[in-house]
Length: 198
Image 1 (cartoon, rainbow, N blue to C red):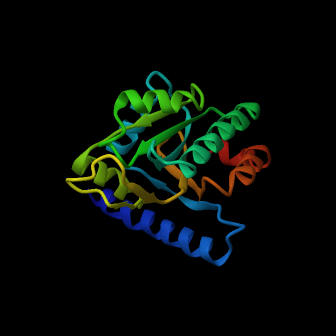
Image 2 (cartoon, rainbow, N blue to C red):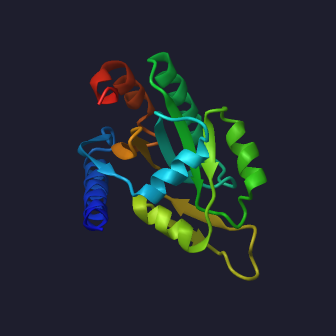
Image 3 (cartoon, one colour):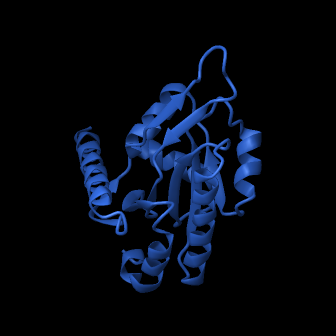
C-alpha cells in the first residue's frame, strides 16, 4: 500500500516537470525519467491485455478519440512510425491508443480505427470511474465541449498530446509530445541502446 502512495506523487512530479519543460522549450519536450515511475499492477494488466500473448514488450501509450480530425490521426501515425523505427533497431515495441471518448468510440470503431495504423497498434476502452482512474494514473485530462443531453454526437474534446514510453516491467521511462517529438524518439532508439537493455 505504501508503494502505491509513493508512485502517484512521483508520476505527478514527472508530469509537472514535463509540462514545465515543454512550456520552457517547445523544441525539446522529451523527458527521460532518471527514476522510472512504476505503474500500478492494475494498469500494467490492462496494458498487457491490449496486446494479448505478447510479453517483454515496450509500449507507447497515447490518449485520444476517433472523431478527432487531425491531432489523433497524426499521433497514431507517429506511433506507427515509431513502432517501425523500434523494430529496425530490434526493440520490441507496441502502441496502445486509449480513448477518452468511450460514448462514441465503440469497440468496433476502435478496432477498425487502430488497425488502419498497423497491427502493432491496439486500443483500450474504459468507461466511467475506470476511465477516470486510468487517466489519473497518467495525469491526462480531457475537456468536452457542448456535450449534453441534446448533443450526444457532435461535440469536441480537447486532451493532452503526451505520449508515454513504458518498459516491459511496467515503468514509465520517457514522456514526450506525440506530435512534435517523433524524430527525436526514433533517434533515441538508434543512439540510446542502453535504455532498452535495462
